[in-house]
Each structure stands twice: as C-alpha cells, then as structure tokens.
Image: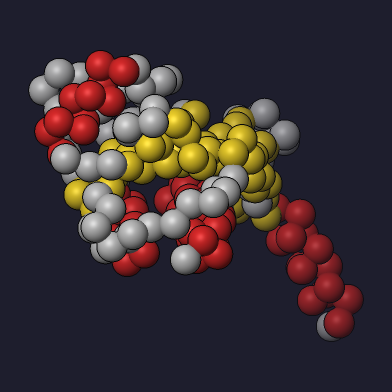
Length: 195
C-alpha cells in the first residue's frame, strides 16, 4: 500500500510543472523619500489583456502604500494600450500638465502569449511539445521634473512544457499574480526603508 501511494505521488509530481521566477534589477531606490504633499500618478501600460481583477489589485496595492496617487489616467495624446518602450520628454510634459504629479509609477506587462490567446493553455490540459508561457511585469518610478528614473526592476516568470501529454501547471492568472507580487513586495520594502 505504501508503495502504491509513493508511486502515485511520483507520477503526479512528475506531471506538475511550475514556473521559474526571476527579479532583474536595473535601479534600486536610493536617497528617496515620499513627502505627504508629493503627487504620484500610476500608469498601467500594456494592461489590455490582464483582466479587471489584476488591474484592480494593482490599483489597491499602490494606493495602500502611496496616499496621494492618481489612478487610471487616460491621455488623448498617446495610447496606453501598446507597450511604451520609453516615455519621451513630450509625454512626460503631457503627464505632468494633465495630472499635476511629480512622480510617475509606470507599471507594464508583457505576456507571451497573451492571456487572451491562451484558450488551450489552462491549469490542466494537454500541451504541445515545448509549449512556453512567459510573463514580465516592469515597474519604474520616474521623477518627472528631473527626467530621472529612480527605480527600475522587472519580474519575470517562465513555464515550459518540454514533453507532450496531459499535465498540471500553475494557471495564467496565478503565474501573473505571483510575478507581480515579487516585484511589488520588493518595491514596497525599498519604499519603506526610505521613510
């Protein structure tokens, strides 16, 4: 009986595939502190396919640690739907003038493939050989006046199914949430150290 239980555990655990998570640092917060009067704007970029629950969680998390924050701005002059590689001076001026903020929290997602395109890539399914799911969540804190990035990090996760049969894995939503949480926790810890 013990052998049968052990064999069942080995078979099931060999079918369980979990993502690998990474945190890449470009710039840590140094000598930065929030004053009560400082105004922030949270810009969520490339969020069109992540879902309302995830977007609301991001809003809630950042409004819990930064009291004077504007959520969900929209700008007529540029699209927030497509991935922004770099905010140029003109865009920074537009953001400053329209929001009256001193700082931008730019949070971006890159989902490969997008959640909308993953009809057959669920938590328990039959995978094609070498199927991959890769998520990135990028966060930058930008001083608008100085045109300076104060914090820049990227959290990544990858899952790869290198064989072909039914298996169990982390769902897309769970993978995205954990990828985000790694980055958010890091930012929150750094911000609290500066207070």
